[in-house]
Amino acid sequence: MSWRRGPAAAAAALVLAGGAATGCDPGGGAGADGKGRPTASVPVRPGDTAEGLPGRLVNQRPSWAPCAGAEGWTCASVKVPLDYGAPDGRTISVALVRRPARDGEGRLGSLLFNFGGPGVSGVGLLPRAAAEYEKLNSRYDLVGFDPRGVAASSGVVCRDDEGMEAAAARVDLTPDTAAEEAAYFADARDFGRGCERRSGELLAHVGTANAARDMDLLRHVLGDRRLNYFGISYGTQLGGMYAHLFPGNVGRMVLDAVVDPTADTVGHARNQAAGFQRALDNYLTSRGEDPKRGTARIAALLARIDREPLPAGDGRELNQSLALTGIVLPLYSQSMWPDLTAALDEAEGRGRGAKLLALADSYNDRAPDGSYGTQSHSQRAISCVDDAQRPTPAEAKALLPEFERISEVFGPFLAWDTAGWCADWPVPGEHETPNASAKGAGPILVVGTTGDPATPYEGARRMADELGEDVGILLTNKGEGHGGYTPSNGCVTSIVDDYLLEGEVPEDGGTCG
Image (cartoon, rainbow, N blue to C red; front, side):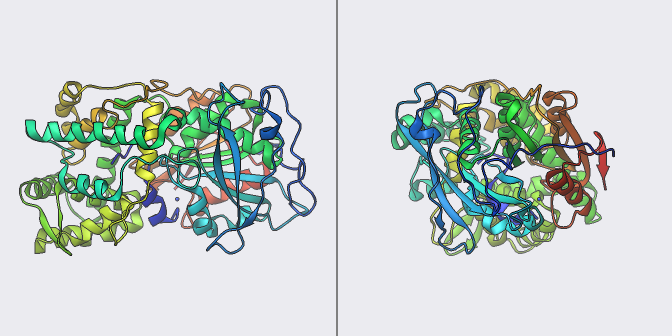
């Protein structure tokens, strides 16, 4: 489990419940007929991913067919190189889902979505979240995809359901003894070896830079001169990488719930310790409770559960690690705060852990029958290919005093996670921090929410700065939750819609709320 970006469970639970105007060419009109159907792909230009790729990739056309269980949507797949350094070699598949624009005459092209994780399935989530984007669907084809290594694309698998269940039940994510430490790091090594054994050479090629190259090939195959894109949570890191690699191909791009591009592994953990504690403080304040006392109360509850897990029904128990996960999920959205209250009341008042366990199961993508999704596999594989920093167990332990000062509830887990997440990972990481500079790109709208727990607001400021002057346009949303574009936030939604649909670029530094 890691909170470095945002979980699929949070996205699914929320269903993304997530000045002077200047013109902006979305670049989607070419390559589509008057009914909004893609025709021939756009010509290859210098700097395109398609430049230098074999014709079998450049000239492919998606074979759209109805999606099972998603009325009005069609599905397809596109072949991409496993290794862009060897484009004539092995290919892998990227899965797509699409709903055409309703207004064929006014169609602006495709709007590609990434909902975060890394590892969230856009093919699975976009049709369920589509009500949030009905207005955008008037002029855009809504297009979701599973990045390489994820779900319906050529996906990473690391462990079977029995292994996932055993680890969740037995591994202490905040080890207190030498034996618990040894078990924690042994499990991390086993997970990585499972990824290597089951996923083979794919594992080395699932990083964000390759996913960004895939997006440019998708843009070309879909017939769009420029990429119009909506990235949420980790999707902002992917969008920043795309803008850096292909600034001339950026159309209208929105980055919401922004990952700090200047933070390394330890920096992300430090940011999230502060971000989740800030959200917990706000939750406690909303209940009329002093945040300091409330935090101490919850920390004491977790310590008791560590000593003696709570019964949770069906022969299962709530251990400390699962309890912490159950507390984390509702902090992603203010609408879920009542669920957190009910779960804490049950645990503290009745000595039962069923409600916290149900929240943890949702985060962990665990079905009632005990089966697990593979989002956590993809998340870890992508993160570890991206992150070159590999703190040692000793270095993680040395972080504990600082992280406990930031948050006695979340700090210990996040300190240990810096070393445990990619411990002895079989593939080296690509960078300490990603490069998001995008000189030459058009204006990119960056939305940061002040109470965001998983991607704290400060990261949005840094992303806007990294993108560059006149490129990163910051919109501050004063509120709670992971992401600002939600049905209840008319201000953010209106500004984003006007930008994407009409090309109206808001004034940099604007505020909602």
